[in-house]
Image 1: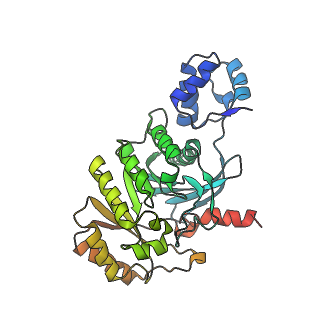
Image 2: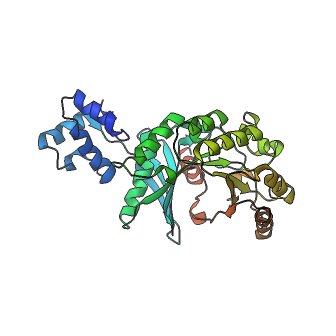
Image 3: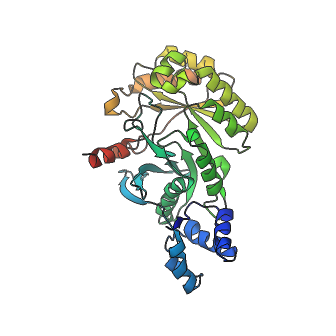
Length: 349
């Protein structure tokens, strides 16, 4: 059985080739083809000898999955695709073309076990963690798309399906790999990890000494409502999450982003806006408001434009740094989990 080398870093592949009696520099040549040129066929790696090109497929494989579904928004700013791996696990990636650069939102797990009440990712439960190579595959396929457009990927957000901090080691390996110049050369400051608030792992991430952006899914300013929307709050209550976020901000000097999905008449009242102000005033933080992208199975509704504006204005008037997320890809099921769920519904019939 061959070993899949897609997703290995330079040191790991050097160890592999040296064990086979090859010079270490061959690893750098192979990774240049994989990560710089998006070539996944040994026979096309022309700076390797013909003999080596014939021998390598007997020892190594290059499994970076394949795109089985791709949807492009009418305005051509957003592309969403489903990447399927050898075991038929399929995961979502979203590519967003914006004036300040191209961003991708990648998944860290197939499905999710956290059961948030508004989210499509949990509807089919949790399948498995993704490897660092499977996360890289999503990023590289996005890079291949924008390369044809004469562009490159500028920002990576680990905010797709799954909880990144419950797949900690693979996520950190992926982050280090995409940062390498021989891979995608993405600056750490251009990488965001989104978490529902896994307190011990937030503190562990702070100790990594990496200037990553931390985004916390808040969605409610009190424990009762947050536990109703996000069961993980029963394990890691709101104040413990805020304290861990403060620790991260102090340790890294990086501003925390608090994600807040606005749900009609659930968490979008002025009472919640006041509680949010009390919770986050004078912190190194900003709030990213996200009007709900409704999931039919969940039964929640998107607030009216008036309610969204009232909530936003209240935060701004009370000196909370707030942004209202620009919606992209609503015509192509760009909310987390929607495209994968439709695929699973079809394949399970």
